[in-house]
Image (tube, rainbow, N blue to C red):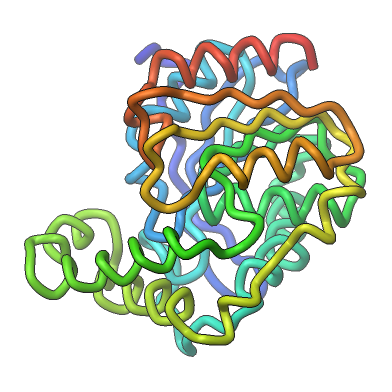
Length: 259
């Protein structure tokens, strides 16, 4: 990693909570990439992927851990069904304003991609949006795999692995797991946000995703109000940037180059 891509770590206060943030330098004439992590993600769980994208595109980048994740403040109350809505409509706009970021490119994975889509469907302030393994509605495959994740957390070394990336891995895991398995969450659906999305969208989906089907990205392509490109990756599960990093990086670089 070059010195230009060495992350600058800090904490910022947004919505009354201290959030962990890393910034990567880049060409100030290019849009800033803002990375939104998955349901059990954090700044550190992205590993070197944001730096690779920043280097490959020449863009500055921001990576942050949401409230309750990574080294950000610990959750004080459980997630409600609308926890991603609140992140997209309240916290993310405040964070961008606090950091002085205008017209970014959002790069979201899983829950983070859903948050990015809701943000894009509620505000006209993005240059582009990359959605990795997004969710726009709840599928049986999602619930099944999340139930299996609960078993894994309780019977394997998963808690120890997550503890490397979260201040309180148990609290973080169960906040995410409980709400996704709550009966009320089966009705969670963000398709209503899609027609208002006007910025270019790149949606990347693995053919072997254990948490969602191609129906997710096909729904996005069909319903968004602006241009949308789908990349379908073979031999790829729920994390395209880990399972197929070279193909994922190349697709993002092509997408960002013409924004």
